[in-house]
Amino acid sequence: ATPLPKPLKTRVISVSNQKGGVGKTTSTVNLAAALAAKSLKVLVIDLDPQGNASTALGIEHGEGTLGIYEVLIEGAEIKDAVQVSPENPNLSCLPATIDLAGAEIEIVTAFERENWHALLKTAIDTYLAQGNHPDYIFIDCPPSLGLLTVNAFVAATEVLLPIQCEYYALEGLSQLLRNIERIQQALNPQLVLSTILLTMYDSRTKLASAVVDDVRQHFPAQTLNSVIPRNVRVSEAPSFGRTVISHDKSSVGSLSYLEAAIEIAQKGAQNGR
Ligand code: ADP
Ligand code: MG
Image (cartoon, rainbow, N blue to C red; front, side):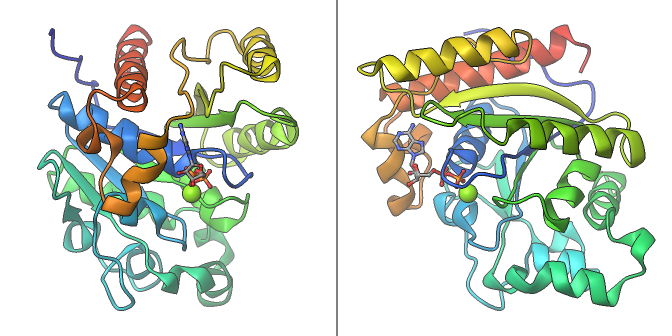
């Protein structure tokens, strides 16, 4: 197999959708693991107080573990909080603990307004300036458009939007797009919605293919050709603290995430990233 193109500089990708349960975390950890399996260096930042990405990557994140909370609120450095994945040395994770649940209120009360938005960006810039050069940083966002997600949008160069192939898939999307636009105008001009990934596709339902057609028609440039099917290997992998890439490499879930990761790498190179 030919190696994947290395990005010119670190691609910081915010995986966002204000809906819960659409495949943000699943896509974050499996795309990250797929790129790492292709010899690229990947950091996952868990920005959801639930800590699901940390769990899925088999990363320690009990209360008191140094993680994203300490980085955002207490000025800890990312390099000191990062843990290497047990399944691949190319893959690491900045974990989230339950402490993060109060972070939005703490940010509002502890920092000057002009500093609210850039806490994560500042921490990532420091990490990169210290000589760490991951090819990809994926930020797993919580299911809201609050201050944590704003921090992800300010730190990111790209947004990856997972869309679940089901009813109401497009509902709330215009709100998300409007928010991305506002961030572009006010805080981060380089932010783009680069990628849409259709998840939990069930080929037996007409509805799923209708959603796929609809999304492709609205976002032809952004929507990946690869679609992630519903697959039990994908949903059971986190209970082993593993990604589906290592849990069952030849499953359709694993193969489709590998395909999607290859597309992301190749489209990025085509677009000069
Ligand atoms: P989010 O992070 O957007 O809340 P998750 O990634 O946690 O969503 O996914 C929600 C649920 O759907 C989880 O239980 C997850 O295991 C399951 N899931 C996600 N993608 C798939 C898939 N392709 N096949 C089967 N189950 C999936
Ligand atoms: Mg999640």
